[in-house]
Length: 373
Ligand code: DAH
Image (tube, rainbow, N blue to C red; front, side):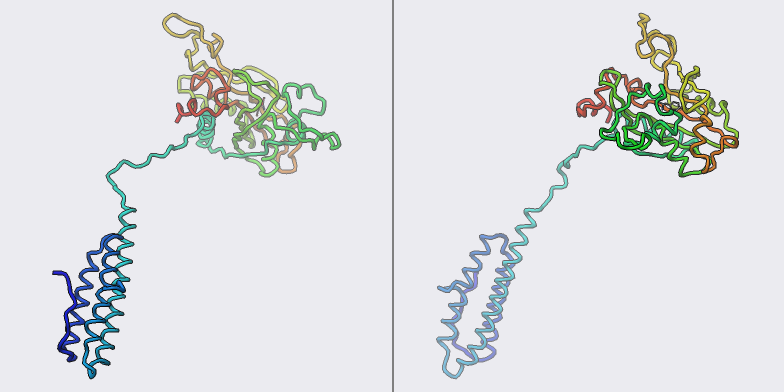
């Protein structure tokens, strides 16, 4: 039975107390079942509406009908009661509001979640990391240097004297407006990672074993096998008594770690201004296994141009002239020796993943890149 306001005949303290607590009990019980805004509205109207709400009725029935002697006492009681009922109605509002928003925020944990796309290493970065980690396991550290470099570090300190024809092999992109500066200070986009050899030797005395992954630039128009921007990994080891045997052993090990233990290595004499002697390192083609032919019908192997060998890097013993530039930091060419190497990462990634156009790597097309994720 819903609560109705009783008429009062007995205005004793006990009777007033009883009537008031029945009223509060009823109000509290009704507030507990308020579940939403609609419930709340009718609950509030029922109790608080000016016209005929329960509080108004109490006012009319209990106060106006009170005998003179009991008026004061009844007034105090009714005011107390109004305050308590108002508080209950207000409380119910809060409860109803929070029940509503909790309901709105409810999560069905049995539904499948929102799957977010996870990025992946770019195939070139991945290849670069693989190469670097082979050398890290041999105790090499990783060094880095600026992409915008001075003529001094890119050429002069690497034993490319000013106007030396060896500079022509490095189709260089120069920064414009540098004519006012002395030549060695002029800025350019580094054409190789080799300048970081000098930068690191200036900072760290021997012994030194470092690899330097990085971006380089050359004035090469983009095509299937060229790009004006590409990536290299440089290596440098300097100590007392480093020999060409160390160079061969280290690089032979690295190639087997990278391409498989059955790969063979082969060194051919070459020229670089900063190494003497210099060599190019070839590995047996990891596509055709060194035969120069592919498949059951003996199709010519393209990656190695049917030679069975793939050129992977340039290397050599650090030229004493290079050490002269960092002699004060402990690199006396009479006391130390070292070897260096530099390889192109992009071409190795191209061969490794069987991609036929270098440009795919740089176009940022997700459909291409997703295949490596
Ligand atoms: N810097 C050379 C280039 O980009 C590659 C190279 C050859 C690096 C021999 C070396 C090296 O450290 O010893 O063509």
